[in-house]
Structures are given as C-alpha cells and as structure tokens.
Amino acid sequence: MLIVQKFGGTSVGDIERIRNVARRVAGYKDKGHDLVVVVSAMAGETDRLLSLAQALTPDPDPRELDVLVSTGEQVSVALLAMALKAMGYPAKSYLGHQVQIHTDSLFGRARIVGIDTQRLQADLARGEVVIVAGFQGVTEAGDITTLGRGGSDTTAVALAAALKADLCEIFTDVEGVFTADPHIVSNARKIPRVSYEEMLELASLGAKVLEIRSVGFAMRYGVPLHVRSSFSEEPGTMVVEEDEEMEKVLVSGVTYNRNEARITLYRVPDRPGIAAKLFGALSESGIVVDMILQNVKRDGAYTDLTFTVPRTDYSRAMEIVRQVAEEIGAEGVSGETEIAKVSIVGVGMRTQPGVASKMFETLARYGINIMMISTSEIKISCVIEEKFTELAVRALHDAFGLGEDSHPREEGL
Image (tube, rainbow, N blue to C red):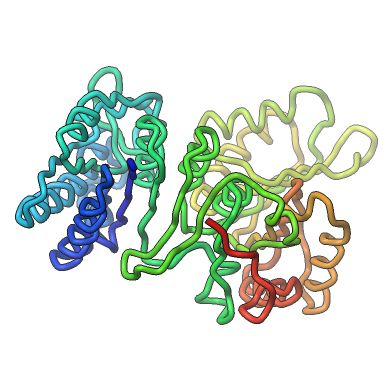
C-alpha cells in the first residue's frame, strides 16, 4: 500500500517531536507500506523568516521572499531523514525543486501545474522512505516558489494524486474535523466521515483543519484523505466521496471566519460593464471577492453594490474601489472590518427544506442581526457583527443538534 503522509509544523516542532514522527513512520514501514512523507517547517520558523525580511524592508521582493521562507522546510526534511537513518531505515530528503514540483510564477501563492515522479518512484522501488519538503515548488525558469499558507497540505495531496497513492494522511495538532471549533463549543464532536464537497465548503468558510486547494486536489483526483492527530493513535476523519449515510445528516458542521471586511459603493451607474470593471480591477490585484449583494435600482439608473473581501486585503481593496468609484461616477464608498461570517454546511440540505429558516430564526432569537446572506446547495453563510461570532456558533451548533449527545453520523471505513 502506498501512503503519502503530511506532518505539519507543530508535529515537527522540536527534535523530540521529529523523533516521534520518525518512530511513527517506521511503524508504517514495518507493516510493509511504501511511504512518501511531506514535512512543513518547524513551528514558528516561517514566521521567524518573514520577520527577518520585514526587518529589512516593509515590502520584500516576492521572488527573494520565496527563496528565504522555503529554507524552513529544508531543515525539517533533513532532520527527519537523519532520524530515520539513525533508526536503520533508508530515507532520502528532497526539496521542491529537486522533486520537480512544477508551479506557475505567482510567488508566495504559486499553484502546482505538474509533478515529475520519476525519482520518487525509483526510490520507493528501492524500499526507501521518501521525504519531501512541503509548501514549495519551482517554475519553468528554475525559480523557487512557495504555495502560500497551508501549502504543505496541497503538496501532499498533489503527490498522492501524481503517484496514485492508496491514501493520503494529514497529521496535524487536532484529532480530525469537528462539528465546530472545540475552543468555542465545548461539546463539539469529531466527524468520522465527511464528503469532499462538505470539506471544501468547510475549508473555504474558515475551518483551518485542511487547506482548501488540497481538498480540491483530493476531490478532483479521488484521493482518500485521513485527517488525524500526530499525538494520538486514534482514527481521525476520513474525507471521501459522498454516500447515502451522509445525506441523512442535515447539517454536518458550523464554521466561522473573522477575516472578513465589507465594502459598499453608493449610487453606482446601472449599466453593462460596471461590475466587470470593478471586480476585474480587484482580481488583477489578487484580491478574492466573496459575497456580492446588488440592491434594487434607485432613481431608475443607479444601484448600491456591497461585497466582502478578506480583512487582510481591506486597505488595498479600498484604494482600488475608491479609484474605480471615481472613474465610473459612483457617489461614494464606505467599508467596515468588524464583521464575521458564520456558516452551516451539510449535504443533507439538498433534499430537506427548512434549514435556512431555522438558521435565521436561531440568530434572531439571540438578537443577532444578519447583514448579508450567501447560499449554495450545501451551505448557508451569514455576515454578522464580529462581537456575536462565538454566540452565533454555539447557538447554531445547539439548534441543529450537533453536540456529543446527538446522533452522530455512523462510523465507516
């Protein structure tokens, strides 16, 4: 059985934890499995490297920044290979450019476009444990790139897809995917099985267990994911194809995202091309727009337009929007950052009515005003005041019976 495993920064945070990872990997090898292990930088190392760059200049060159921050994984892959070799297990470490994880040239947020697996397959055939640096790749021109926060998850799943692995295990500092953030909801329950589509929604809506691109890769190539703890032998959460049992559960989880900001343009001329001009300018700057709400026409030829962006991009977005507003003759622009998005997710929503009304009634019961609403087949999201975030999550978790004392989705696999 070929297994790709990924260990995050907390899992390799110090020498003893690296030894623990080596022992865990050795245990799999003893059972006869072929292994590719993807490793992140040691906990805090990427932030330390970023702070060095910021100390030099507030606006580091993106190419050189990728060269700098990619060194964190070089340390951890080498140390893990040393630990395994010291235990008598043949192992070899690789950096992204050595494996030839090909990416585009968007430094800091590069996307994987292909992987050369020839060297890895040769090493696996010789019985070696292959250790690959997560989070990084190389452009066609030979420049080092990084994949952005959570990029090691994407590396692992992409390798699993390219190698046609039987399983991809994501080891982290949590025991799996929960019905809500356990730090907020004391009776949050671990979900034994969740569909790719549900996990994609949860990841995009604020759940930090898996990086969204990794889930997209897994869904596209049918890679089974097992999210589990580095510090426990207990099974975690399987992320797999949707099945009939999953459809019986109305809501699988409640999630939230505080990295939200809202921008409104007033009296926008209501004519073709205006929206394209605005959102095209934001897209060219790499700013992702989430919810969009266009109000009913005012005065026959004008409308108000409201949308959300990541709070981290708010200042830059406001500059762009003000410039576009002046060009198109909008009346003005306003924005706010003290908002959050609370969402419920579940494949059962497709076939069972009344979910939205129950969510809205629950928030109203607790005096929480809804500013914006967004829906899909399997999720409902509401923008609310940030100060009500935790209250909203707890209230919705209780309202849909997601706690430990409810009827959990049946275990499988």
